[in-house]
Image 1 (cartoon, rainbow, N blue to C red):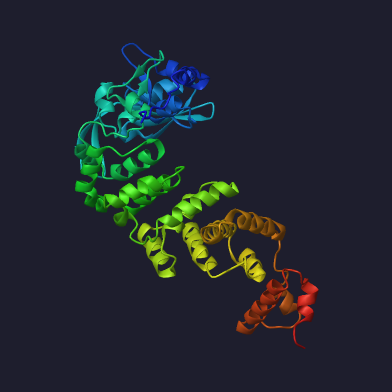
Image 2: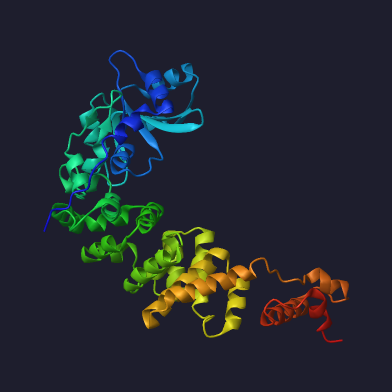
Length: 413
């Protein structure tokens, strides 16, 4: 079998370094004996021909010098993390993170105490993976201290130096490994990395749940996280971060249906596909990972939607459109279509039909309010609420067809 090797777009580095705002900032930070480079993800993505959204710079300048030089050039410096060496410089509306070169003084698996440095290779050695240590200087020269270029081309995600040492500096790197493998990896994961991850996986318990959820969400947002998740399960990592999970095969069918229906990949929908569809399990996950109110509402909407069957019972679609938030409704359609696909192979047609039918119902709003009933002499209280609920059910049963007048006329004398 021919070895995998992706073609890297080295010519894209020229466009990256020549961009007007980047050039302006590099010129402003220039000085005798000083150097500033583009570092990390921007270089990696340019080589892959992927979108470059954020440009981070590493510099020999101290943070205060960065602030002064940026301000003198007419840019807006913001001390977003100045105690750690980071200044955000806004150039004509575009933000750049500029960080002074650093070396680790002390690490505890969650955070590091750093000192400033003037050595680019020393700074690069603090990073996680070889291709994240790539840097591009102001002359357009590519610097690759750890053979990250070859790893990127060959789809290999490899820690810099000793994987155990890198992980013990920050246990979140365990999850970052699987995220980067999902996005850039090919074939089996690096063996040394996996061995270190298995040995140190319990260190994940030291991390805040907010950091774990943020990284897990990024993993689920990759084009195909399933390979990485299966390696996480094999390495004993998966049950540590998602003990509420169920059948992983559901994820594959949901991802396939997202693609078939032209619906953007969504990390929360993919999380739903991994969960045991029980409200107690969902509630446990919501509390454990401290999900936002919106995320929690959407997960609960997913579970409640499992009780509907708009394919066999047309009335259920009206209930779903009225009861579920828009994102939860989309989730429900994708999950239902995926289930139909597994059972009969007709999921795409089912999904498209449900989408068209829900679009036709968009904008429908229950036309009766409490004030309408009080205007007819009904007093506030539980009885009024029950009356509203009865009218709402009647409106849904009519397929949103009954008007306000028709609903009010249906009230008993």
